[in-house]
Image (cartoon, rainbow, N blue to C red; front, top):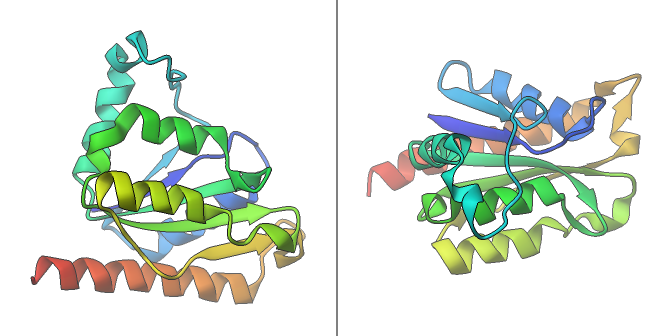
Length: 170
């Protein structure tokens, strides 16, 4: 199963729109987790780990063959929800195949997922799909994703499927 995690809390989220588009490209072998619909504790380094949703999310991550993180970019980084997710689910990320879909207001933040990717690679030995999707506000017209970004999302989904198969065969 391929897992798509939408980390935006904004009702009009462009990263969520792209996550849903990716989900539909996977056909039946995918699940989407939308943090707009999940009540999730903030990591306090203590009792937060006892929340049942944390175990649920760890299980979803553990059982996935690939994960796409869809997040808005704030202050040149993925949002706090995405960072909190790693803090609470930690070891579930070990050896996972991970890709990124992100959106921001301008063109200058396109490398923002790299610190998150580096953390996943170094801490959990994740394999990062070398094809990110980054879209700024000019990539959306009347609340719809433009064709160029749709194609990049398709390429990311195709890469996650191809790499998943390659990793299973080795």
